[in-house]
Length: 250
Image (cartoon, rainbow, N blue to C red; front, side, top):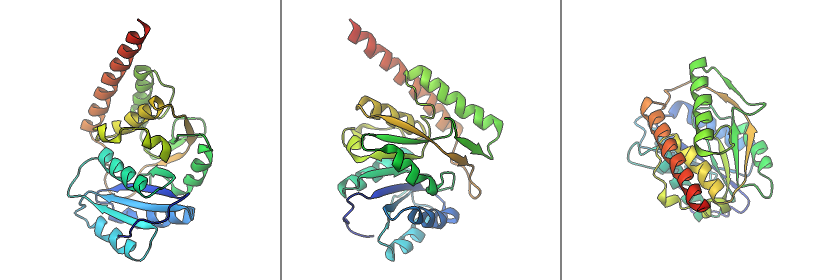
């Protein structure tokens, strides 16, 4: 694992993994090829298939790749929090969330970075804005995602159309203004949580259309428990936000 590097102006692409051996080499190669500014940090949750060991081998001969090993499945949110901290300590200017399964095209990253501009805080790779699309998703999955995002907009009073999206570019400055240590969202509601925190920190959010593709290899990490956690937390956050607004009006 490489030591701290001169990362001024570079982009840290954080990729959480669990049993992604069949996908990770391609994802790393495509991410590095997309821009010389890209550096990949894999956060592996003790993958039984040896994903972490494979990335360790790659990192030994490539100073633009690093890996952090964890002892078990500790959750998507905590993996990104760990990656954010690692990147902020090393002075990366932009920090990216990206899936390991190929659903997020690394080739879209330069366009997303460009959309961030000099003042933006967060760019979301969005499926549900004009120009966005999903490939190989059944209608039931599309309706679940669209419905969940519509509920989040209504419950939270926000205008983001794809608040659950996991392909994101954050400016380091906005992450430093957020209390990352207080975040305990472990599933996909982590994305909604981060959306709210960026907005509450005064950051601007841009949605950039992407084509989202269902994974071709491996198994999806989506479960009923993840969906239930997201719906429950969004409901609680919505109630809390409305209560705070009422208090401020008095």
